[in-house]
Length: 328
Image (cartoon, rainbow, N blue to C red; front, side):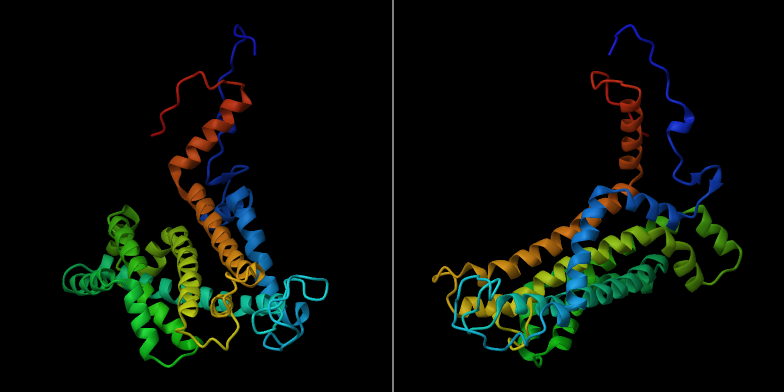
């Protein structure tokens, strides 16, 4: 770059407004989706998560055999006949991995939706209605936050009947408190805004204000909490199954780890029995984490402004020797 060359100031058109496109207003939801689509982290997360969801939906076509069927000798290494080898009980690991994705993803997303919804309702009511209602709900939330999660999870799973429904209820019961605290804090901030005051003056009821005025401004936070709950649920479900607090006859990624531990797979160096389910859990967690990071970059005004300024500086070949711009 010629040091004597004149650097033209960036035009106003170079920094696009987040709410304008070709001079026409764009809704917040459409603008959010447009920015998410061009985020590399969001694309990576959606591709990985989409592969697992498609695998779970089409499990009967991908692996038509019964996952509990005995197909060969125990602990057979991967081969052309059994792509991921056999378990310590002589079952096909690939078939169990495909069918196990159904149970693990179903529990993960179901509990994520239930716990996020429960936390959203309690958090929004607690944050918007001060006084006795806020005090009671906040105390109730603090009690669940103070109780150690893992011992409570194990205790409830031990005394309740084993089954997928029990696991979903236990994980929902122990996982709603933290989202409720986050949503309450956000509502406390939003209820002081001008648009909420205008709704109150116009005579709108509390349910309409909370769910029609405040909730749309919290969608990115709700989605981030949902994906965070999915990560927690899949890991907690695998932990309960590994410890034997679930019905181990149901094939899931957690029960695959349980049977691998029972058959001493690590001592026998049968890595193909425990590495694939563990890798699947890690990949799903990685994909949902990428989606959370992408939504943070899209919805965080500071990160969005810094990205736009960096793009303009690169366009006009302004080097990094200049001082970092201050973003208000």
